[in-house]
Image (tube, rainbow, N blue to C red; front, side):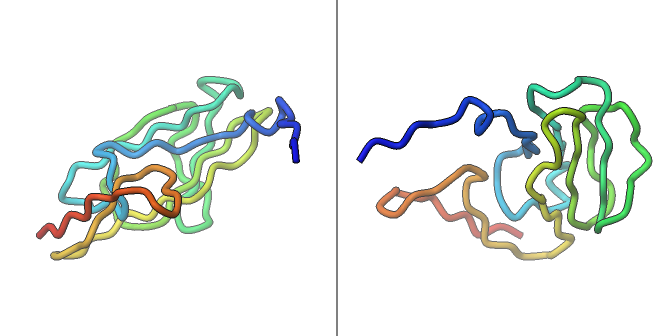
Length: 109
């Protein structure tokens, strides 16, 4: 069957991770960027469920482990991104994966 895609469905806030691996690790010097059609420069950040004092900035370098989200007026809250402080980590590309995709796993420490 045919499923219409609502234009509003694409209007979401996204949290981009650089370098683009998940889970992210502190020793990678992780940069988080809040993206979306909502108001630029009006980003609110959250760390471990609490408001995080980086008002208005759309991008920052992570210095503490935790679970991060961002919010933009008009498009709402992003999905969470976890940043670990582990010594050894098994990572996958930080993008949507579908069954049948070929995936590169990266064991790093």
